[in-house]
Structure formats: structure tokens, C-alpha cells
Image (cartoon, rainbow, N blue to C red; front, side, top):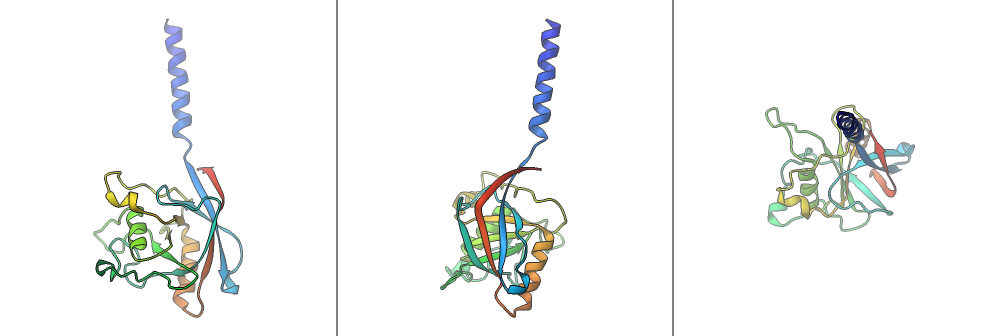
Length: 193
């Protein structure tokens, strides 16, 4: 009897260690298609665990980095009046680039989902959240299920690493040319991190 109990405890421990030791991050890829000087390699992005990734598809869009509210923790100007300041009336659509964390000293930030929701409400077709620290890509943490807006998110979003985010921000702020990206969901892959 004690041998069987010991065997069961060992099996449960092994299963528990393996289950907790692997965290799956779904990644897609991004390419800069314009300006020519930035066209280079393919970048990875960690797909959010909410919203709508376009599995098996791709999207081309112009990057917009907001001058105000770059952390997107509050609604963008005009949204409360029904305006969508980031809605593109022509092609390509707007891919909103926002910062992870918060720019206010006593405000710890907000959920990734709130950043994406605020971007969607302002008319963005997709949202990229630029990491504020150097670390491996992680899945974007979910907001608590009781948050009502999470089920309303109908656009794709992803976390990009800090270096890629800084590259995009510098190019957008330079303002000489539109920065155009192609987001690929055709090669979505799960990675254990």
C-alpha cells in the first residue's frame, strides 16, 4: 500500500513540474515594408491571448505612435464624442503602437487588454504594445474575466520587444515617411518559454 502511494505521489509531482515548467507563447512575425532603409529581417511578436488574430492571414498597415497617451491607459481624445481619430479612410489601415507600463509615477499601468480596447475604440485596425524592458517575449497577460471590455475586443494585438519598439518609434517620430508594417499570422507557432 505504501509503495503504491509513494508511486502515485512521484507521478503527480512529475506531472506537476512538467505542467508548470512550460509556458506557451504564440508568436507571429512582422516585417517593415517601408521605408526602404528599415526593411530588413523579420521580427517576432507575442500574440495576445484575447481579441482576434487573423489566423492564416496577413495585414499591412501604417504605424501610428500617439504623441499623447502613448501608454493608452485612458481613452484617446475624441472617442467620448463618437470620433475615431485613428480610423483610416484609405488604405493602409492604422496599426497603433503603444507603450507597455505607464508614464505616471504613481500609476502602475493598465492591462494590455485595456490598451488594445482603447486603441480599437479610436479606430486602430491592430495594436502593437512595445515592451519597456529587455526580456524574452511573453504572452500578454489577460485582464480579469469580470472586465466587460475584454469580450468586445475585435482586433488583433501583440507584444513586441523593446528594441523593435524603439526602432519603430524613432522612425515614426522622425516623420519623413510613413512606416508600413506587414503582420503575418500565417506562421503562428506556439513556443515554450
